[in-house]
Length: 175
Image 1 (cartoon, rainbow, N blue to C red):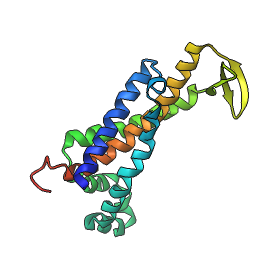
Image 2: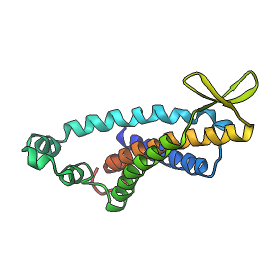
Image 3: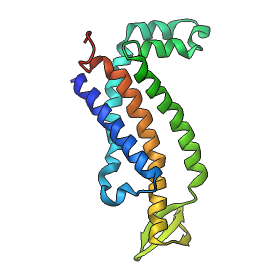
């Protein structure tokens, strides 16, 4: 079962990355693939087993019960959770972690409202208040930007889950 979760997480990460790249080049993926938002739900499908697996990890339990100074060192934590993960995959997952924060800051500073269609008109609104009427091209630009904000988080959560679940992938000598 965990082997399938690894491949599910890897698929989610790949799709999240693809959607993110398309949104960076201003392509509104939601126009042709509205079910792309199901990637939100997939995060919970992979993260619940990841958290449960980490709770059973004896080395991690010992680390959590160690002194405060030891727990303040995140390297020890990462060494435990990525113990059986190849270094290249750990680096990619870590880069995704930091990129997600940068992407979120850029998203929140650039998103001025939510694009919507009301009475056949493309509009930009904030908390139900009309900001302005926009063109269809602007609408798709804002939608692509909205997807970019979320897909950065998909890269983060699916990437970390993929790296943690790697030990169950069948690609290692130990299973």
